[in-house]
Length: 381
Ligand code: SF4
Image (cartoon, rainbow, N blue to C red; front, side, top):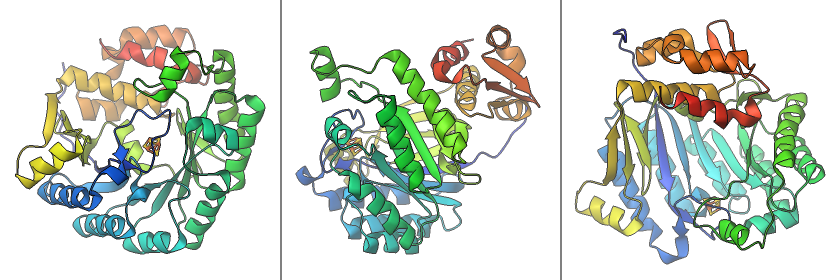
């Protein structure tokens, strides 16, 4: 039986910018071409939603993502950043995602002065051909320029995103990408394997045989290479795909992996508050119209049962290298993880895919490349 203890949860604020300049060929996120919309009107609607949801929880981190926040006008992005800081003055971390090629020194200086503390740059690859295959709008030189300009603007917490297993890539080309990212001396690197999302030009090209996916063994070797290379370069792996210099782990994303609360603002954004998961209307016109008419902007919502919440918490916690903190899990979910997940825990400890140490249950290094196959056993107990 669950024990009864109440805790105060951290809350993250996520602002979704549903625009991009052009659509990358692999991207399955909800975003529209900014040229087809009055983006000022949408930002005004987002500001209204932020104001409406002001009193919900104690916000510790803010993350403006998308889409491409950096494709907004300087005025719109600054207004958003200023309003967010005004509303939540005591935040610990404020991240903005930026595309290389869409930022300049002036904008970065103003964002830094406005209170943005962390810049997440979507590099993806340092290889010209790979950027073209992905349909990225920037060239290789833009990446180092963006990092240099961010540093000059005063950012001391810069993250780079990479993608591996891009069609046509091999271990040697990926190693060069990792080396280029390390060379830029940033504080944080995320690297994800390319996935073929539905309704994207990439999946169509795959089905039609116009592109060949990277062999599974090579994909796995690239992941192993990510861990080895970044660890050797002084990064600590703190999540399956995330690496940071000590003290530079992304607090906002750690909040997700703790299964703490978050408020999602903007078209298509998701929220998780008071055990309810919900999604805003994923249609820019309908969203702005609903805001203007003071109507409900939630498209769907679901209240999680105690057991569903415990399962989700376990799966998210296991993504962290530190895994499930057993006493914390009990306080948060009111379940004893070792009792609730006795079967998968026993099975995977016997197979050396899970380990237990100091009140933590975590994925072993052997399990990391096949994490999803372990985590799915925690989905329904
Ligand atoms: S910039 Fe990001 S969100 Fe926009 S299309 Fe490319 S991957 Fe998707």
